[in-house]
Length: 351
Ligand SMILES: *Cc1c(COP(=O)(O)O)cnc(C)c1O
Image (cartoon, rainbow, N blue to C red; front, side, top):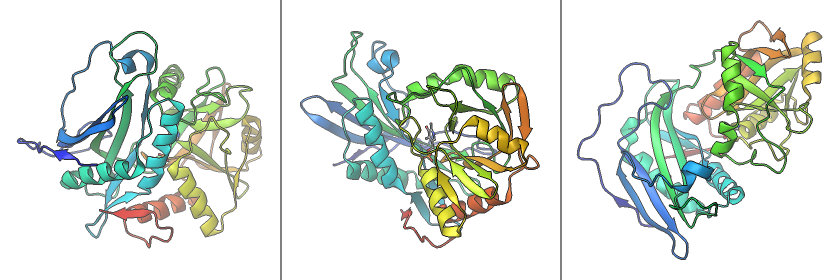
C-alpha cells in the first residue's frame, strides 16, 4: 500500500491547559476508499479537516460502521510506543465481518497507523496521564436510501491528544441497568460499532441524571448476568479473587481486559472468566466480600468503581476509593504501556 502524503501548510497550535478527552485533533488524518470491483484504493494522509458527504450517505441512516480505540504513548525515556496494535487490527476486521464491511489487510492497517502517528509525533502529549488517542473507523459511503449493503466504504484514522477519560484513578459510581439492554446473543455486542452506543444513550442519560457516571449492562435475555460497563469491560474482586464475565458473544473482547487477565496470572492473583449474576454480586456486597471493582478499557486503563446502584439499592465498594489490586494493576499496565517497565509480554511497538 502506497500512501500519498499531503502535509498541512498551516500546522495548528498544540492545546494549552487541561486536555480533556477527544476535543482537539492533530494536524493530519488518514483516508482510504473502497469500491466494489476495485477494492481498497487511494490511501492518503491529508490535513485534518471537514469532509463532504451526501446527506443520503448510507452511514447516516443505517449506521453501517465500525471503529477502534487505541493509544500512542510517550515514555519517560522520550520514546513513543503503541500498545498491542495488532489486536486492534484483528478486532476491527472481526467487527467488519459482523457489519458486512470489507476486510482490511492487517499489515496495511498497521502501516497506515504508524505512518500517521510518526507524521504527528509531536502531538503525543507528555504527562503520566496523557496520551494520543487514535480512532480508526470504517463507514458505508453509498449515496442511496434504499436499504442495501453499501458498495463503497471509507476507512479513516483521526487522532486526539487526550488526558485519561475520567482523570486518573478517581472512582466512579455505576448504575446497574435492569430495563434497557445493550446487546443480545446473535446481535452486534461483540463488534465495535456505533449502534451499540446509540442503543445505550437513553440508559446513560438516566444514570447521569441520577448521579452515576456509567451504566452497567446485564445480559439481553434474562437481565441477570453482568456483561460490561459503557465502553469498558468489568472486573470484580470478591473474597480475594478477580472475576470478569466470560466472553459470551455479546461482550466486547477488550485488549485491556486481556492484558489485565495476563497480568493477574503473572502476579499470582487468582482470576476467573465466568458468568457472574447481579444477584451474586449484590450478595457478595451484602456479605462484605465485594472488595474492589473496576472498568477496564483503553480510554481509562482502569476506572475504579466506588459505588453501585441496583433496583433502588446503593452499595459502596471498599471505602469508595481505588483498591489495592486496582492500583497495582493500573501501575503495572501503565508502566508497560509507557516504556517504564520491561516488556515481558512483547506488547509494545516502538515507533
Ligand atoms: C472498546 C470497548 C471496550 C474496551 O476495549 P479495549 O480494547 O480494552 O479498549 C469494552 N467494551 C466496549 C463496549 C467497547 O466498545
